Length: 173
Image (cartoon, rainbow, N blue to C red; front, side, top):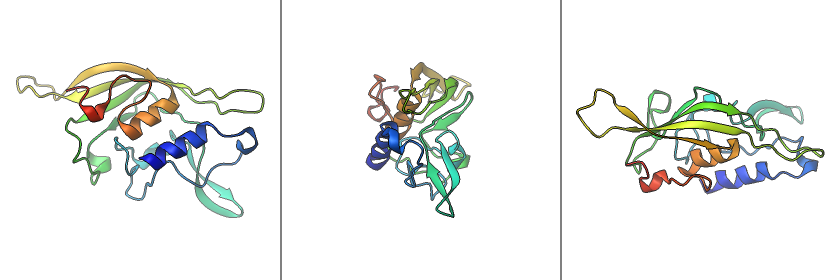
């Protein structure tokens, strides 16, 4: 998790000279099919949202990391194992939580003529019900808004400095 946060900060704060160069260092290790070490199970099919592309560098094809993040309306991400993340380790998570993107605006990277625009993600947090009387498994815990950059931090840590809830501390129990 610490390495992912470090890489995220490097991507967000890139110097103008390095803007065009994509990083060979990805936000996470995806060798198990999802972002290893993150609070939420973010599978490899979110590569596009995370600006991970298969590119040519020095006559070699490899996965590279950019900073033009763009989660889309309808994206659903969970903090526990589910069909796309069957082997996701979630033992330390007390509450099963999901987030669904309601609307978004993409990031625009910094250029020499413009500051970085970190975009926007409006999302709903769902939590598993603990009352057996309901026919519904999930209930809405709240609607929130973060920048695309802050949303990735939230997916990594289970909290964002801009959001006053820490999922690791059971904020939605």
